[in-house]
Amino acid sequence: MADRGRPRRFDRERALRAAMELFWEHGYEGTSISDLTRAIGINAPSLYAAFECKEALFREAVDLYLTTAGSATDRALSEAPTAREAVEASLRGNAELYATADRPGGCMVVLAAANYSTANREIRDYLMENRRKTVAAIEDRLRRAQSEGELGPDVDTAKVAAFYATVLHGMAIEARDGVPHARLTSTVDAAMDAWPALTGVPSPVLP
Image (tube, rainbow, N blue to C red; front, side, top):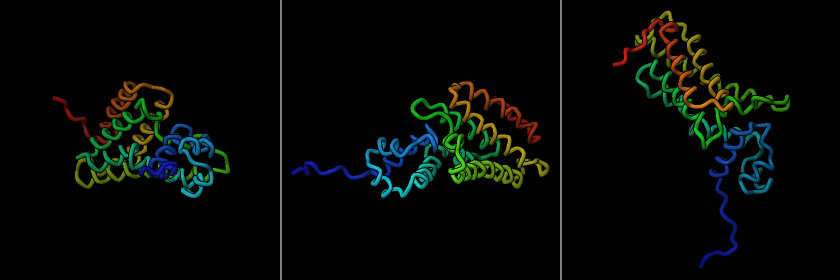
């Protein structure tokens, strides 16, 4: 016999995903507790019981983003056989993500605290730390390429990593402004055209 009238079991994973979408679209300060409770379908006390506070929920939402929709960079850097392919795959994978029609535009980590008050400085610093991790991960991959002989020892890996991370973050803002995927792709093409000048390694000749 069905348990008529029994409330639905709280789905924490679904709730976290709904919160991620809201924070991604509206940012940390632009998302209120009432927005979250309405999207998740629970009241404020239940939300605090499940996630402790808005900041803790936001941090969990960012972690979810980085392991799901926002994982293109990590996958590219770990899976591509060369540093050049890794950087290009990261840019193209993120360009695809940023312009996907059924998701908020751009990157959650870049855009979620574009505006912040001094009361939320810790959130700004948290997102800044995550963006710096992206730069460091690109630089680590470039240094590995040096150790493997793909790049020369005189290549300034910090400069190259900063350049491509800046392109990546800039595309996130462009996508939020409605720039179409085709234009983001042309930006990636231009960024990869700069690879020989930045690294001293010619681009591969296409068949």
